[in-house]
Image 1 (cartoon, one colour):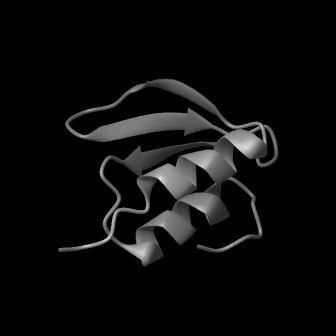
Image 2: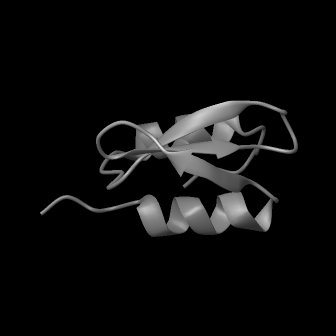
Length: 65
């Protein structure tokens, strides 16, 4: 069974002030970052570490999962 990185990803996003804007199409969510001032998508569930780290990079967060 694949690992789900969604909980850890959301925990980091919220800790850095990111906010959930709205539900996107399908299983994706749209988030907004106060650091990078960008909106970005987060899949739910997030099965790949690479995808989770890409969302963190889009948010302007230098941490990795």
